[in-house]
Image (cartoon, rainbow, N blue to C red; front, side, top):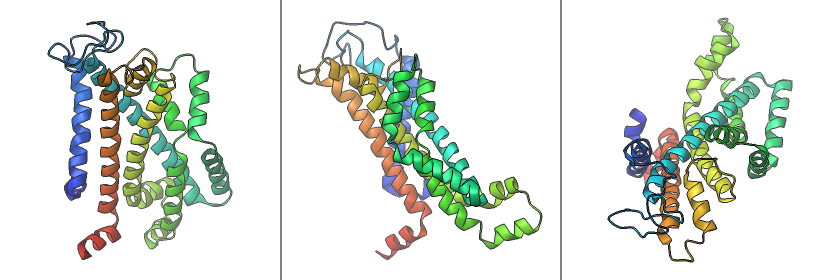
Amino acid sequence: MKTLKALPPRGTIAAAVFLAIVLAGLIGPLLAPAGPGALLGTSFTPPGSEFLLGTDHLGRSVGIQLVHGIRTSIYIGLLAGITGTLIGVAFGTLAGYRGGVLDEILMGLTNIMITVPAIIVLLLLSISLDTRSVTVMGLCIGFVSWPWTARAVRSQIASLREREHVDIARLSGSGTMRIINVELLPYMMSYIVMAFVIQLYGAILAEAALSLLGLGPSGTASLGVMLHWAIAWESVRGGQWWVFLTPTVFITAITFSLLLVQSSLDTVFNPRLRVGKAAR
């Protein structure tokens, strides 16, 4: 709560926008009169009193698809963000604290993962999967997005382990896990929180990119899947702008608001930025 209160105005507004979108994704599907695949009208009905956001090429409500798509995309982002952050923190902490051979092995694996473009790995995984469920997609994205977090955490842990409070805990007989959980990770929470936010919006964009290629989640609606069908049926060229514009606006709003939150958190957690702002 203190962190949220300390956010600059742009960060507070961005967080409010993101939370409002999340709320729409949570409550909207419960209030929708039908599922995202229900054929409720005619093909490409413009926005109006019957359908506030119009219909798509099959006569499905764009508004109903939108609230379900927000929920799906954010769920994938959260699952991938948690997975990638946990793996990155675990690898980076072990490598930075233990050092030696373990450090070389873990950082070698991290460097290999960094050199291989994540989108290529995701494409190969998506093609090889028989069923691309929402949970499987979130886990796959999380499993390939952890290396940069691991490198950042490793460098910070390697610096923290030389601090006096860590030496005191080590001399007092504290075990490795207690030192990591009590003496190291609490000092890393700012980096972990910002890494999670980066992983979150990166995963949402990754899902949209895969869906554009026809490799999105199966049997459900997401913002990326909505864009895929809008492009496949050439809605922009045909003048059905609402089919393409609706998911585009919300993907942009989600990622841009999270970017502003991340930069605002950097201002809160980084004393140099706060001092520089005060001086100006």
